[in-house]
Length: 106
Image 1 (cartoon, rainbow, N blue to C red):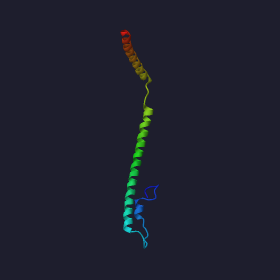
Image 2: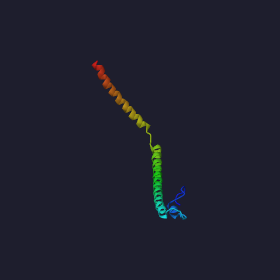
Image 3: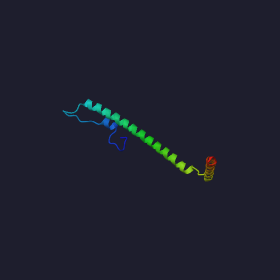
Image 4: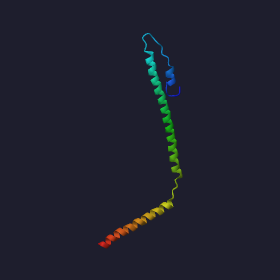
């Protein structure tokens, strides 16, 4: 069997042999139904493998994406201080321009 967690797979269902009795089920009907079950099992197994593969890919992508940003992102405090100073200087100049005009008008 291909799955460790499952009792049945397509091959086990296909190879299952039911004993016949005098008042048993219609063998053709049972075989047709088992064929449908086998097809579903095979589809489920393919979908499970596809989802596992995608899950593993996403886990690798996620761990690869998170770790470098935390480790390799340099923090340049000197540059940040310069940017902050420039912004404060601009805000100060704008305040002088706006409030200076208001006081001049009054």
